[in-house]
Each structure stands twice: as structure tokens, then as C-alpha cells.
Image 1: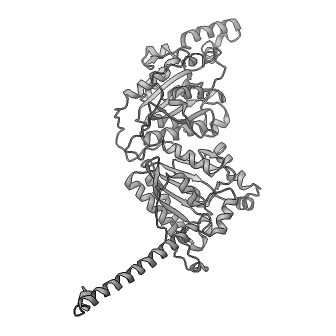
Image 2: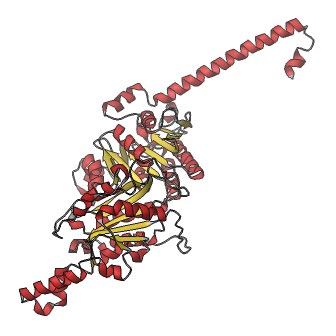
Amino acid sequence: MKIFCKYAKIPFPKLHWRYIQLLVQGGDIMKDILTELESRREEARLGGGQKRIDAQHSRGKLTARERVELLLDDDSFEEFDMFVTHRCNDFGMEKQKPAGDGVVTGWGTINGRMIYVFSQDFTVFGGSLSETHAQKICKIMDMAIQNGAPVIGINDSGGARIQEGVASLAGYAEVFQRNILASGVVPQISIIMGPCAGGAVYSPAMTDFIFMVKDTSYMFVTGPDVVKTVTNEIVTAEELGGASTHTKKSSVADGAFENDVEALAEVRRLVDFLPLNNRQKPPQRPFFDEPERIEASLDTLVPDNTNKPYDMKELILKVADESDFYEIQEDFAKNIITGFIRIEGQTVGVVANQPMVLAGCLDIDSSRKAARFVRFCDAFEIPILTFVDVPGFLPGTGQEYGGVIKHGAKLLFAYGEATVPKVTVITRKAYGGAYDVMSSKHLRGDFNYAWPTAEIAVMGAKGATEIIHRADLGDADKIAAHTRDYEGRFANPFVAGEKGFIDEVIQPRSTRKRVSRAFASLRGKSLKNPWKKHDNIPL
């Protein structure tokens, strides 16, 4: 309007020319703005500069942006807050204000499904967390909860930014609060691709899955130097908190991979098994396997000698679509197996005793491992398939002193609490309290099958005979006869079948067929627990 007023008395030809001038000038201004925008973007993409990027590559690590590009579908990443800078003016920090402030955040897709992601940039202040750095992470976590999409965090950070003091600690606490609120609402996955120390470890610890990279990532609350000062122990960062430590000893991590590329590829594969949130079903994928496939080899899987082990993974692979099995915590508590398969293209969580390790006994570690997995499946409406061959809980003072009672109760609690479809197959031994714990009929199991080789009893024949016939312990022939009698009476699935605790005794070769049909019949299952604020699982 001002232009019209200003040039109202100018003859038309001159006025026309003035408009052309203004347009040209405006075009120049727009060109300048676009040039500056691209310049700022290029600067932001460089993070801490080419020298630090080269140093990152020399350590066998990708940059924050390279990781995001590999994780997400091509050209799907939409970045937030590229130009955000820190607000610290102490210790000369006002002279260094790199764009992005050490973390790349935004959303994209994995195989077409929406994912929120943050990736810490070690080239900017060592990836340390500042107030604005934390705000960027909180922003995408809030959006993930609001929009019902998983959060994947790529951690590569030296910890809290010391220059900002308590503000950085407050930032960590804000992130922790989002982790808590998101738990059980959207899947949360952490990938440790560098250092993760001090308070920084607690955010990944509250997520559903943690993956590490061998030799380049580590997690610990206090580093080797502090440990040496306080306890006089000499330990390397790798020994204290490396991938091997956390996958084999502590159970903090769910898996470890050789390099960044493999880790990101495997996380993409995992995401395909998971629903986007707790209100959606897991995705159904195309399958090319016959649901009623017969596996004759399973008839000979269980050895004639009841004390001889066999590999339960063979059964899992032969039941799964295309033998595709994504194992969780493969290197920890190997006496129990946890992971995901698909049956008729639909995700199923698998829990299985492994007779190859500790004869398949339950202990502290295996109970914790399986309980957490069962609770994850239940939170996200993933059906649970349980394969049982368990002679009981592992005896010994170490187990009792370590609290096997409470830890075993975690698995019992998890199964009993779960409202998702639950199918159980007893392949051989199901003794004592361990029979109850492993998704028995009494814990609201929907379908409980047994193979003809199943032995469901309070304990093994030899132990039971020595208790029942204590008076004959001095007579070997009598004890042997009593043992054979006990085996004939109880070393089979039919007593439990007579009481309705087993729905059907099935042929091993038809396991996939029967399991597939069972889950198909349970797709409309609706079961609610009594209202409560939350439970009080024995932690």
C-alpha cells in the first residue's frame, strides 16, 4: 500500500520501470538469503569441522549424520533445530557456538514406517550434553510420544558439558523423564557408538533395547581413572564397560556388532519386528512359508537319553517363517533363549529353555533376562511362544544368596501379568516350580501343548524315588524298580493332560502347524487385568 501511495503521481511508464527495479532488488535479496541459508547448512553439516570428522573416521567410526543416513530410508530424514546453538557464556564458550550444538535430531522412515531419531555428534565438544542439546532431544521424544512412533538414540558423547554445570545435569534429568514417560508407550532403542559415561548411561538403561559396537563403544558410571583412585583397581575402559562386558557379564546391552554399519543394519531389521506404539499391532510382512509345514526332523530332535542335551534353537528356526530368528541377549544367560520370529508374517516373541547350557535350568540371570523380554512383548501386544525343557531352578548357595527367589518371581510375575496371546510347547522336562513359571496353564496360558516326550512332574524320577522310598535307599534293586515305576507313571504328559493342564499332546513334526493355528485363533483375544495404578513386581 505504501508503494502505491509513494508512486501515485508518477507517470505509468516510469512507475512500471520502478516496479521492475524493485523486483530485481527483491530477487537479489532473496538470492542472498538463499545463499546464506545454504552456507549455514553446510557449516552445520560439518559439525566440529573436517579435521575432527577425519579423526572420527580414523577411529573406525561414522559421523552423526552418516549414521542417520544409514539408519533411515534414503532421502527420508527431516531435520529439526539445525541452527540451534548453546547459551553458555562462561569459560570462553561464547566464542564457540557451532550450529546444532552437538546433536542431530529429527524424523524419517525405516522401510516406510515413521521413526524419530537423535544422533550425538562427537566432533562438537565431544558430543557433550548441554541445556540446548538436551532440549533438542526432549523435543523429538515429546513428538514421538504424541505421534506414536519409536525413538532411536545414537549415543556418542563424553557426558555432561562441564562448562554449563548444573544446567547440563538438569538437561539429563529432562531426558530421563521422557524415557520414563515413553516406556511402554513407544519402543525405545539405544545404539552406543562411542563413549557413554556417568549420568549419560541412565537414559539408554531405561530404553527397551541397547546395542553396542565392539572396540569403539563403552558404558560405565565411573571411568577407569576414578575406579583406580577410589578402589585401587586397574582396569581398561574396554574391560570396565566395553561391548563384551555388557553383553556377556552385566546384561546391560542386548547385542554387540562389529562396526557402525552392521549395528545400524541390524537395528533396521529389529524395527521391522516391532509395532510403532502400544496402540498398534506389530506389522504383518509378506511370507513365503507354508503355515502348516510339516518338519519330520523334529520327531528325532529330543534324544532317547533324557540326560542328553539338544539345541532348542533348531526347533525355533523350524517353527519360524523362513527360519528367520532375531535373538535378543544371545551372549548372556545362554540357558534361556529370547528373541523374535514371525509366524504367518506376524511378529511373535519366543522364550525357550536351552538344554545345551546348564541343562536348561532357570537361574537368576535367565529369569531376569526372560522376565524383561516377556514384559516388553506384553507392553507392545506381541504374542508369546514358549518352548519348555526345564529340570528346575539351579541349586546352590550362590543362587540362594543372590536372591533367586525374587528373581525367579520376576519371570513368574511377568507371565502371569501378560494379557497377550500365549502358546506353550513342553518338549521334554517340566519339573517343579519351573513348570509353573514357564507360562503354564495356571498363568493364563491360552494353548498349552506337549510332545509325547514331555515329562511333567514335581521332580525327576531318581530324586522323587529317593524321597518317597527313603526306607529302601540301601537296596539298589528296589530303588531301581521304584524309579522305573515312577517314570512309567509320571514321565509322560498324560497325567497333566488328564487334569486339563495340557490342551493336547502333539506330534513334534506338526509343531509349526499347531502353533500357527493357535495364534490365528487368538488374534481377537481381549483380556484386561484389574485396574491398578501400576503393579509392584519384585525388582
